Length: 185
Image (cartoon, rainbow, N blue to C red; front, side, top):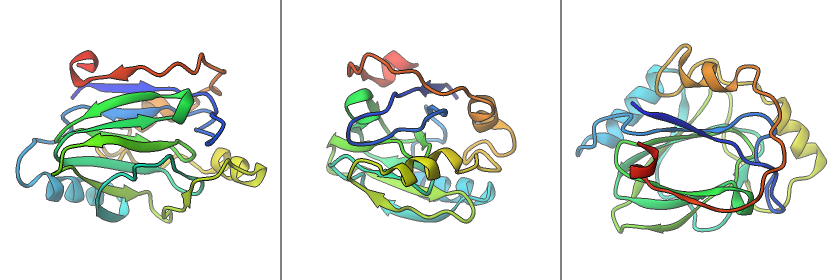
């Protein structure tokens, strides 16, 4: 399974994570009619909980007290990650997206059947934030520990490879680019 990382500098409306990148898992599970159940089973097997099925909100939001994994169960979507400091990615069935706390995300467009499955590390639950982060929220985001397991790969995995000891993100150009599955593969 191809794995890609995306680093984002802070944005005006969302802090993004100060150290850790978004992790994209392309084709994490087979894209079939049981993809939602397969994601739920995989997340639970690696200790991720609090799951739900639904869509990604069409407005910029982030979570200050939780990392979030999204598994695309069906349909396709263009998601903007990182707000104005970020990128637009195209995702489809079987793809996974691991968002470290503070990372802005929103759905720009989606097919009518688009559905994601979400989950959170043990002891974490989502807190919906739409306003610029306070200093206390920025500290909470930076202090939130890495999850004990990768939601799709278990012990080790991409979380250990890309989040352990990762340095702070430096300010970027703020230019948005669209990453399609073809460009990421």
